[in-house]
Image (cartoon, rainbow, N blue to C red):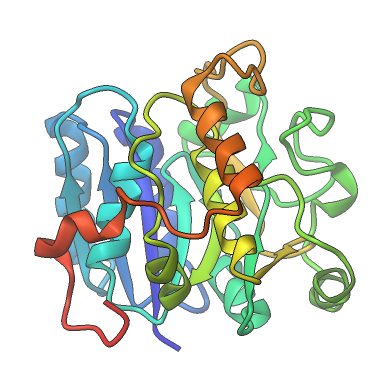
Length: 279
């Protein structure tokens, strides 16, 4: 299996530095890293250039103009450019457990896509990590375990046999594209993210719905693929399910009409598509 790791980033080079450092420590390195850049400045480009040499694997910087929050388009560009059989999506403010990539590979299976979580470090813990502190993947980490979008304390350590059991017996948890993985051919089949969805939220949930409408199943990564999320101010609206938000209306249409393929997706980036059998 050839694995592509696609990392979304925007103007936080210090966090991206820690993310890429944790990639370098993987027991199972990805076969390539694609930096999906939503319009960052020169400081981010400098980080990427340095790691192109340091990682020892192909690293590609896919920059797009800063025209607001366009995560869907940004990720599609990385998926289009990817050459792997399998794609892991990650945010550039996450610090990875050394078995993060290996765990995604361990639980990957035809007919499935995988949903991981994030250990939401507190502001104090995040500052410690940004200052060079060692990452701790344990139930006693200083993290927001009770947040609705954070990993629970009981899952805050790696245990592969429990992870396998959970993935076999349960549907996937809360959809978050900061830690998800897919067979590339499945993403191509549904045309990736819907690029009509701009601004914060719902683009990942909408993709998950279309994948499930094709018959794929979402499975959870618990006790596996651990990643620490660095604290920052959230851009989320007060009510993420507010139906006055355009993205939520598009999501509802996908659910109601059982849509499987979006019209504005990966195929808009044909210039990036490799000579790949699934392209």
